[in-house]
Image (cartoon, rainbow, N blue to C red; front, side):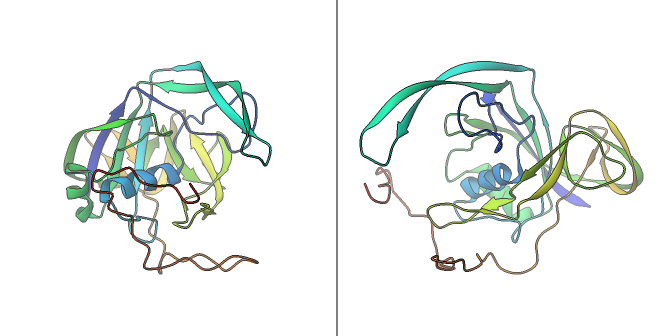
Amino acid sequence: MKVLRVHITGWVSSFRNPLFIAGFQPTLPLPPLSAIYGMLTAAKGEWVTPHDAAIGFVFRSNGKAVDLETVYEFAGKLDAKSNINRREFLVDPELYLYIPEMWLKEAFERPRYPLLLGRSSDLATVKSIEQIELESRSETTYQNTLLPFPDAQLYGQVQALPTHFTAEIPRRPCGTRAYCLITEKITYRGDVWHDPKMDWGVYLHKRIPGEFTVPIEQGRQPLDKDYEIPDVKGQQMQLPGI
Protein backbone atom coordinates (compact mmCIF):
# COMPACT_ATOMS: atom_id res chain seq x y z
CA MET A 1 0.00 0.00 0.00
CA LYS A 2 1.31 3.44 -0.95
CA VAL A 3 1.06 6.02 1.83
CA LEU A 4 2.53 9.34 2.85
CA ARG A 5 4.89 9.18 5.82
CA VAL A 6 5.07 12.60 7.43
CA HIS A 7 7.75 13.09 10.10
CA ILE A 8 6.75 15.80 12.59
CA THR A 9 8.72 17.00 15.60
CA GLY A 10 8.37 19.53 18.39
CA TRP A 11 9.94 20.71 21.65
CA VAL A 12 7.19 19.67 24.04
CA SER A 13 3.67 18.24 23.85
CA SER A 14 0.83 17.49 26.23
CA PHE A 15 -2.36 15.52 25.60
CA ARG A 16 -5.03 16.02 28.23
CA ASN A 17 -6.28 12.97 30.08
CA PRO A 18 -10.10 13.33 30.03
CA LEU A 19 -10.36 11.66 33.45
CA PHE A 20 -8.71 14.69 35.12
CA ILE A 21 -10.62 17.98 35.18
CA ALA A 22 -9.10 19.97 38.05
CA GLY A 23 -5.79 19.91 39.88
CA PHE A 24 -2.77 18.03 38.56
CA GLN A 25 -3.03 17.42 34.80
CA PRO A 26 -1.15 14.30 33.64
CA THR A 27 -0.53 13.83 29.94
CA LEU A 28 -1.49 10.81 27.91
CA PRO A 29 1.60 9.03 26.58
CA LEU A 30 0.21 9.12 23.03
CA PRO A 31 -1.95 11.58 21.10
CA PRO A 32 -5.64 10.72 20.66
CA LEU A 33 -6.94 10.51 17.10
CA SER A 34 -8.72 13.84 17.64
CA ALA A 35 -5.32 15.55 18.03
CA ILE A 36 -4.14 13.99 14.76
CA TYR A 37 -7.25 15.02 12.86
CA GLY A 38 -6.95 18.49 14.37
CA MET A 39 -3.46 18.68 12.88
CA LEU A 40 -4.78 17.55 9.48
CA THR A 41 -7.46 20.24 9.69
CA ALA A 42 -4.87 22.91 10.50
CA ALA A 43 -2.64 21.81 7.63
CA LYS A 44 -5.46 21.64 5.08
CA GLY A 45 -7.27 24.75 6.29
CA GLU A 46 -10.52 22.81 6.02
CA TRP A 47 -12.26 20.39 8.35
CA VAL A 48 -10.68 16.92 8.03
CA THR A 49 -12.29 14.04 9.91
CA PRO A 50 -12.29 10.21 9.79
CA HIS A 51 -14.90 10.58 7.03
CA ASP A 52 -12.18 12.12 4.82
CA ALA A 53 -8.96 10.27 5.57
CA ALA A 54 -7.58 7.11 7.15
CA ILE A 55 -4.55 7.56 9.41
CA GLY A 56 -1.91 5.59 11.27
CA PHE A 57 0.87 6.88 13.48
CA VAL A 58 3.83 6.09 15.68
CA PHE A 59 4.63 8.63 18.42
CA ARG A 60 7.78 8.79 20.52
CA SER A 61 9.23 11.16 23.14
CA ASN A 62 12.34 11.37 25.30
CA GLY A 63 10.75 11.58 28.75
CA LYS A 64 8.34 13.56 30.89
CA ALA A 65 8.51 16.63 33.11
CA VAL A 66 6.09 18.81 35.06
CA ASP A 67 5.52 22.53 34.59
CA LEU A 68 3.47 25.14 36.43
CA GLU A 69 0.76 26.96 34.50
CA THR A 70 -1.65 29.75 35.37
CA VAL A 71 -5.35 28.96 35.07
CA TYR A 72 -8.32 31.27 35.49
CA GLU A 73 -11.36 29.99 37.37
CA PHE A 74 -14.75 31.42 36.44
CA ALA A 75 -17.83 31.17 38.65
CA GLY A 76 -20.49 32.13 36.13
CA LYS A 77 -19.45 35.80 36.17
CA LEU A 78 -17.03 37.94 34.24
CA ASP A 79 -14.73 38.06 37.23
CA ALA A 80 -12.19 35.27 37.53
CA LYS A 81 -9.49 34.39 40.00
CA SER A 82 -6.15 32.97 38.99
CA ASN A 83 -4.70 29.73 40.26
CA ILE A 84 -1.69 27.54 39.56
CA ASN A 85 -1.84 23.96 38.30
CA ARG A 86 0.88 21.41 37.69
CA ARG A 87 0.81 20.04 34.15
CA GLU A 88 2.81 17.11 32.87
CA PHE A 89 4.38 17.32 29.41
CA LEU A 90 6.41 15.15 27.04
CA VAL A 91 9.90 16.17 25.95
CA ASP A 92 11.17 16.06 22.35
CA PRO A 93 8.00 14.59 20.81
CA GLU A 94 8.32 12.88 17.45
CA LEU A 95 5.37 11.82 15.29
CA TYR A 96 5.45 9.57 12.24
CA LEU A 97 2.12 10.02 10.50
CA TYR A 98 0.91 7.58 7.82
CA ILE A 99 -1.80 8.74 5.40
CA PRO A 100 -3.11 6.84 2.34
CA GLU A 101 -4.77 10.04 1.00
CA MET A 102 -2.16 11.65 -1.26
CA TRP A 103 -4.11 14.90 -1.56
CA LEU A 104 -2.87 15.81 1.93
CA LYS A 105 0.76 16.02 0.72
CA GLU A 106 0.34 19.61 -0.43
CA ALA A 107 -1.29 20.51 2.89
CA PHE A 108 1.80 19.45 4.85
CA GLU A 109 4.14 21.08 2.36
CA ARG A 110 2.42 24.42 2.97
CA PRO A 111 0.24 24.24 6.11
CA ARG A 112 -2.57 26.78 6.23
CA TYR A 113 -2.42 27.17 10.02
CA PRO A 114 0.23 26.36 12.66
CA LEU A 115 0.62 22.66 13.45
CA LEU A 116 0.30 21.63 17.09
CA LEU A 117 1.21 18.54 19.12
CA GLY A 118 -1.34 19.07 21.88
CA ARG A 119 -1.96 22.52 23.33
CA SER A 120 -1.91 25.80 21.41
CA SER A 121 1.63 26.45 22.68
CA ASP A 122 2.97 23.06 21.54
CA LEU A 123 4.14 24.07 18.08
CA ALA A 124 5.30 21.36 15.68
CA THR A 125 7.45 21.26 12.54
CA VAL A 126 7.26 19.02 9.48
CA LYS A 127 10.73 17.48 9.04
CA SER A 128 10.06 15.33 5.98
CA ILE A 129 7.31 14.02 3.69
CA GLU A 130 7.88 10.76 1.84
CA GLN A 131 5.78 8.49 -0.30
CA ILE A 132 6.50 4.93 0.81
CA GLU A 133 5.17 1.41 0.35
CA LEU A 134 3.82 -0.42 3.40
CA GLU A 135 4.29 -4.18 3.30
CA SER A 136 1.45 -6.60 3.96
CA ARG A 137 2.53 -9.21 6.49
CA SER A 138 1.09 -11.86 8.77
CA GLU A 139 3.04 -10.63 11.82
CA THR A 140 4.52 -7.35 13.02
CA THR A 141 5.48 -5.44 16.15
CA TYR A 142 3.38 -2.54 17.46
CA GLN A 143 4.75 0.09 19.83
CA ASN A 144 4.02 3.74 20.58
CA THR A 145 0.70 3.69 18.79
CA LEU A 146 -3.04 3.50 19.37
CA LEU A 147 -5.25 0.49 18.57
CA PRO A 148 -8.98 -0.15 19.08
CA PHE A 149 -9.95 -2.12 22.18
CA PRO A 150 -10.88 -4.90 22.87
CA ASP A 151 -8.38 -7.20 21.18
CA ALA A 152 -7.05 -10.40 22.78
CA GLN A 153 -3.53 -9.71 21.52
CA LEU A 154 -3.27 -6.26 23.11
CA TYR A 155 -2.39 -5.10 26.59
CA GLY A 156 -1.67 -1.70 28.12
CA GLN A 157 -3.53 1.41 29.24
CA VAL A 158 -7.14 1.51 28.04
CA GLN A 159 -8.74 4.91 27.58
CA ALA A 160 -11.99 6.18 26.06
CA LEU A 161 -11.02 8.84 23.51
CA PRO A 162 -12.78 10.76 20.71
CA THR A 163 -11.75 10.49 17.09
CA HIS A 164 -12.65 14.11 16.24
CA PHE A 165 -14.70 17.12 17.33
CA THR A 166 -17.58 19.01 15.77
CA ALA A 167 -17.05 22.19 13.80
CA GLU A 168 -19.77 23.97 15.75
CA ILE A 169 -19.02 25.94 18.92
CA PRO A 170 -18.97 24.76 21.64
CA ARG A 171 -17.03 21.78 20.29
CA ARG A 172 -18.44 18.33 20.98
CA PRO A 173 -16.52 15.04 20.85
CA CYS A 174 -17.43 12.51 18.14
CA GLY A 175 -16.64 8.84 17.70
CA THR A 176 -15.63 8.22 21.32
CA ARG A 177 -14.63 4.62 21.93
CA ALA A 178 -12.09 2.57 23.92
CA TYR A 179 -8.49 2.45 22.67
CA CYS A 180 -5.44 0.61 23.92
CA LEU A 181 -2.38 2.84 24.28
CA ILE A 182 0.54 0.64 23.21
CA THR A 183 3.76 1.91 24.80
CA GLU A 184 5.60 -1.43 25.04
CA LYS A 185 6.51 -3.72 22.15
CA ILE A 186 3.72 -6.14 21.26
CA THR A 187 4.00 -8.88 18.66
CA TYR A 188 0.77 -8.95 16.67
CA ARG A 189 -0.36 -11.68 14.27
CA GLY A 190 -2.92 -11.19 11.54
CA ASP A 191 -3.32 -9.16 8.35
CA VAL A 192 -1.07 -6.23 9.22
CA TRP A 193 0.90 -3.41 7.58
CA HIS A 194 4.62 -3.00 8.21
CA ASP A 195 7.04 -0.14 7.52
CA PRO A 196 10.20 -2.00 6.38
CA LYS A 197 12.53 0.99 6.75
CA MET A 198 11.48 1.82 10.31
CA ASP A 199 10.87 -1.86 11.12
CA TRP A 200 7.58 -1.39 12.96
CA GLY A 201 3.92 -2.11 12.43
CA VAL A 202 1.50 0.56 11.25
CA TYR A 203 -2.15 0.29 12.25
CA LEU A 204 -4.34 2.27 9.85
CA HIS A 205 -7.56 3.61 11.37
CA LYS A 206 -10.04 3.24 8.52
CA ARG A 207 -12.21 5.96 7.05
CA ILE A 208 -15.78 6.18 8.32
CA PRO A 209 -18.37 5.84 5.54
CA GLY A 210 -20.71 8.76 4.97
CA GLU A 211 -20.47 12.50 5.47
CA PHE A 212 -19.38 14.43 8.55
CA THR A 213 -22.64 15.05 10.39
CA VAL A 214 -23.63 15.57 14.02
CA PRO A 215 -26.68 13.82 15.52
CA ILE A 216 -29.47 16.14 16.64
CA GLU A 217 -29.56 16.32 20.42
CA GLN A 218 -32.11 17.94 22.66
CA GLY A 219 -31.71 21.69 22.43
CA ARG A 220 -29.06 21.49 19.72
CA GLN A 221 -29.08 21.98 15.98
CA PRO A 222 -27.39 19.72 13.39
CA LEU A 223 -23.97 20.73 12.09
CA ASP A 224 -23.93 23.19 9.20
CA LYS A 225 -22.45 21.18 6.32
CA ASP A 226 -21.42 24.44 4.58
CA TYR A 227 -19.19 25.46 7.51
CA GLU A 228 -15.93 27.04 6.35
CA ILE A 229 -12.92 28.14 8.37
CA PRO A 230 -12.80 31.95 8.13
CA ASP A 231 -9.97 33.43 6.10
CA VAL A 232 -8.62 36.01 8.52
CA LYS A 233 -6.08 37.46 6.03
CA GLY A 234 -3.65 38.62 8.70
CA GLN A 235 -6.30 40.05 11.03
CA GLN A 236 -6.99 38.66 14.46
CA MET A 237 -9.94 36.26 14.50
CA GLN A 238 -12.74 37.43 16.78
CA LEU A 239 -14.07 34.78 19.14
CA PRO A 240 -17.88 34.40 19.37
CA GLY A 241 -19.46 36.55 22.07
CA ILE A 242 -16.39 38.79 22.54
